[in-house]
Length: 302
Ligand SMILES: *[C@@H]1O[C@H](CO)[C@@H](O)[C@H](O)[C@H]1NC(C)=O
Ligand SMILES: *[C@@H]1O[C@H](CO)[C@@H](O)[C@H](O)[C@H]1NC(C)=O
Ligand SMILES: *[C@@H]1O[C@H](CO)[C@@H](O)[C@H](O)[C@H]1NC(C)=O
Ligand SMILES: *[C@@H]1O[C@H](CO)[C@@H](O)[C@H](O)[C@H]1NC(C)=O
Ligand SMILES: *[C@@H]1O[C@H](CO)[C@@H](O)[C@H](O)[C@H]1NC(C)=O
Image 1: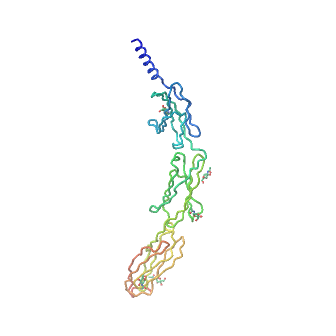
Image 2: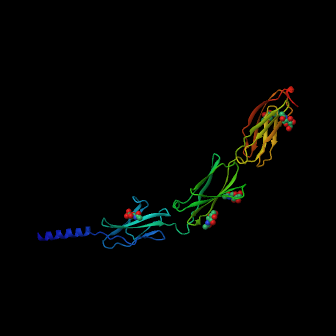
Image 3: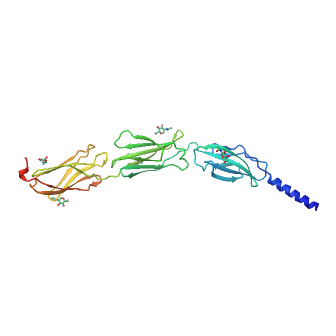
């Protein structure tokens, strides 16, 4: 009976002793330059392991693991962000006091934050230029250097852009652009990426400015879409009628003056219907249809 009590007592005190082993905190928590978290061992209890947690916000860990090692690589996290790295010793389900280090996870030395997938797309009369960077770098890039080269302007336009994209508004058709983008981070520039982008061609629709007629002629004046809207080279104006056809070749210039169309040798007091269309590098415009009556003979002044 005495023996049994002794054994029981021994067993209980052993269990208590084991339960009572609270591991000392793992000291010396540091984040080294190669992005490994290191800590010193906690040696007072057997079977000690370490709970490693990473917090970005206070409440919920971004990452959590348990390891028997004395270091853990943090290279899987987004760079250039401040994190709270905590290490808590853990022995037989008993947690010790945590230790933490509040540190920025730096981008590896010499990293080239390259520009990927640089594209241009037309949206109405604007060009949306977009690009991407590697998923680990959004917090590193302070801005992008963005250059817009236009084949007819000498000096490029330079912008510092925060988002990985830019909407270039009110572009002229047929303009040849070159876009250059490089990321800027910690006094460094990544490799520059370049694309050529030509705004798709579009036909040039004429607008009627003036109609003058007498007994034997019909004169019309046409304005074309201006150079700052449509740079596609204009080659001719076509007049197509049931009783006459005419082609007016056009030498295109940036001024793009109005085009005078004179139809002569007509019969007085007659209805003429015809259409006018413009040819440019995109092809023929939709025709402008019109009908004009020549004046009776007595009404003419000349
Ligand atoms: C880091 O996280 C630990 C554990 O949650 C917390 O006790 C500590 O206050 C945090 N430190 C900072 C600077 O937020
Ligand atoms: C980064 O690029 C910008 C724009 O091209 C340039 O002005 C600047 O000098 C460059 N900086 C470095 C450190 O190369
Ligand atoms: C862009 O155009 C320029 C000049 O027209 C040419 O030299 C260059 O090779 C082109 N670049 C690309 C990426 O097509
Ligand atoms: C139309 O132009 C022609 C030639 O330029 C001219 O002879 C004619 O008088 C003009 N007619 C009218 C109605 O202005
Ligand atoms: C003018 O051209 C159109 C189309 O090419 C043709 O159908 C028409 O018969 C021509 N008219 C004259 C008067 O030549």
